[in-house]
Image 1: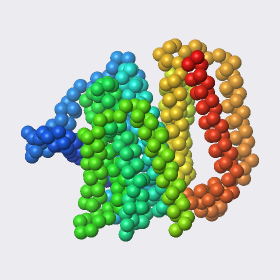
Image 2: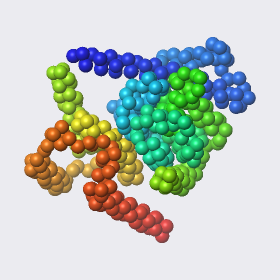
Image 3: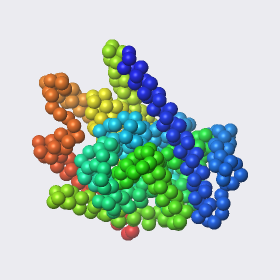
Length: 320
Length: 173
């Protein structure tokens, strides 16, 4: 009985913590995105609500909660309702293994990084469900594009992560952090780091890889028909995905929570948000790729490069 | 301690429900997209079974490969096949019987295999089944099986390329 109580309390506290982090992170990131885009385009961005518009996203979230939930007439109702949930749940699961600091992590599983990759693939299924069940050709087109893109970019993402994993010899995220006690992996694996960031940007469907939701050609793609909180959940999942990809990149390449003077948690969040800033910078600097360019980049450049990197890493490990 | 066991039983029942429910949707549904989603649900349940057997590595691989890759590849195939909104012709009894016979045969052989095998409880066997051990076995003791599986994948890939090339040729001419 004591075991059940202790585990129940543990699960409850972790869940509350993760959901709190997810919502605050999304609120902050949306504000940050607006501010970054505004300053890149030489304008101030939101300024009215709170200090430099800091409370703007809260106002927007309240507006979204108040909006009507619309279900299209010919939609496949059940799948239409399930899609946002299938999108959001795997995102929550990924937080189980992320080490925020030496003591702050939910469970130190020895399949850690595999768990994150396994559950992140479910997002594609959710996008497909949303696009198909909306019964709207733009949504379906967006969903199909998303599937093609994710298949093309998942492979180099996994292979680059693999070259770090065979260096460390463990799938456990804490082991990967421990391995970087003196030198960060990014110094051994600069190419892998660059590839990982590119593929991570593509995995989160962000510009210049945002073909699945290209506003100007697809009217927002797979979530065109969603409104109110259902749309907000897709949005929440997208920004949380950004956080997770950046957190994985931090753990794999930038030494996780390691750093001088400041406490580990601060270092971890600093690195994560620095990578997110980089991704925002991409978005507001590069134009969107055309679909064939995107697939060509994935299959003909990123996959061979990541394979070459993996083979080189394996050779180097055997020799030294 | 008894509370723990009932919890384990409860989770086992839940996993079974998910697996069988998904399998039923995959077989009985008339909408091919629902079939794929049912299959994904069922495979997810199988991952749950691996987790129940204390093999998280296999469970994660199951989700990564079967739910993440195979189901999405099937979705791709569906997008390329005939439109979903057309009414489906009723199922032919002969086809149903053949499918039932095939599935029954596989089930019969598997259950015979399960019956014949002398199962040893995990604590008695006492081998280390970590990821490193699995990797080691795949490259030593089970290398032949591993290579055979890769051969099957190679053949499938070649078949796909041949099919795709033939399709392209006929479209041009």
